[in-house]
Image 1: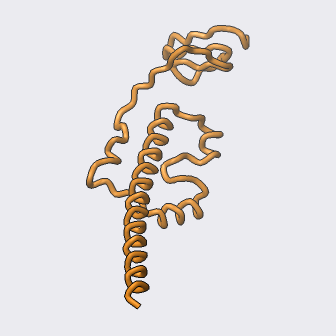
Image 2: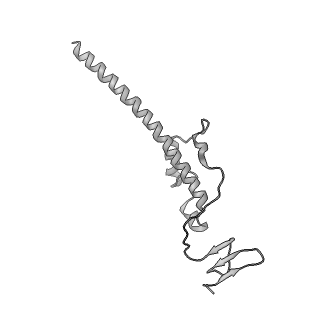
Image 3: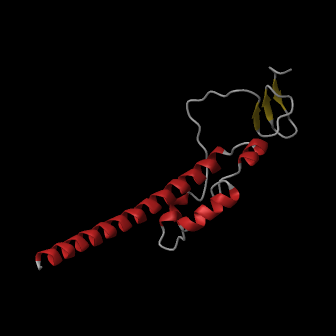
Length: 132
């Protein structure tokens, strides 16, 4: 029965390679597709809003040390036990990429400020040396 197509008329569930489909379409095996579209809401563009509060890197580091994974990203055991929701995971990963971009922008601003300060200090040192 492992190669059968099962259609449960009571709930409309379809199973391919499984006698007990648990979703509208359950496939016990590989799926080949040219394209998959996932309908999802609340795409994380809100990360770029002025009022979005991003965790400080210190707080993020503390969270990672305590939890051994990124905030909002499911633990490995959860994925192993429950599977992976592709749409939700893409949303989470995009949010993390956008947050990383914000961290990089902030780091770049800090670097530019430090370079400017260093240049000013170098000029001050040169001025002091030449005035002797």
